[in-house]
Image 1 (cartoon, protein in one colour):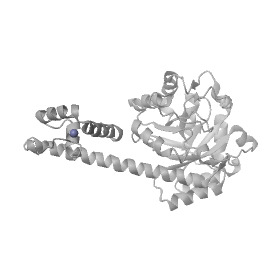
Image 2 (tube, helix red, strand yellow; image 1 turned 90 degrees about the vertical axis):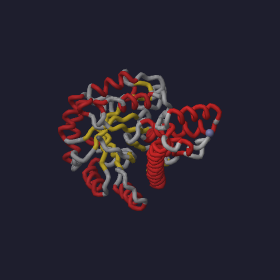
Image 3 (cartoon, rainbow, N blue to C red; image 1 turned 60 degrees about the horizontal axis):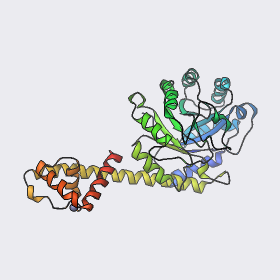
Image 4 (cartoon, helix red, strand yellow; image 1 turned 180 degrees about the vertical axis):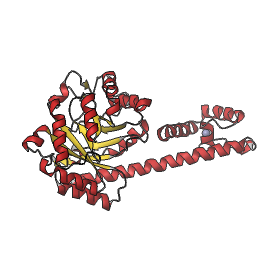
Length: 351
Ligand SMILES: [Zn+2]
């Protein structure tokens, strides 16, 4: 399966990269970190540069240093003209980027499967951004306003899924990003387009090796909520990307980058701890239930303070007689009802 990563994008200089390396070392970060470099048809061919782009002549050295630091290079490529893609990517390789180690994200309308296939032949792993946009946003990028683009509020997932299936063999990651670097928040509501899309991908066996990437307004302040939420929908199978969320007045802020990565790490750790607690509870609950067939009287009246028996009950491991007794009890006991709903929720989230 595609490896999950956390990415920091819009990096333009070796100095910024060095700052992130320092953070990673000092904070002992051990998860995969991707560094996103924006290139465009214009920056490659005309040497233009905006504040979120590196100079094209520097890209080879940046790629090498990125890898030396233990990070993954992600090229975010933009063009208005699909016919320039392969020539431009050849130039990226000539400039020194090792395609066999790099990710390539298309910040364009859906690229043909045939072109993606050739991009894969060059060696890149492909991040395919599905065509969603906030069509009501007047300041949005024109390229994301075509007929094939679904509106992030009232869009339909079927055309998005079709875009994916047409290219299923040539996609390594699918990205859902309605903001396109404009810091528009990701809607994590259960019924939102992004979550419905992700569930469809998550439940499709043929796409089981494809990674999911979410972006849109993720910042140090909300990364914890975003990660816990995504983990509850797509356990163990998502990456996140930030760009605007670690900038102040348009400029990369290493203090924000540090908080973003550290908060991510802490959230990951707490999810792992919770998962281990639930696992232990369920195992010991099963063990307890096995014994309770023989020692019926040992189970308490109320389960609120006996999580192991509660786990056995929730797992359906208690004897019929015990189960019935607790069913009757829970009709009256709000504390037991609450404790069992928390545990069930936890199992759903972390199993
Ligand atoms: Zn109770």
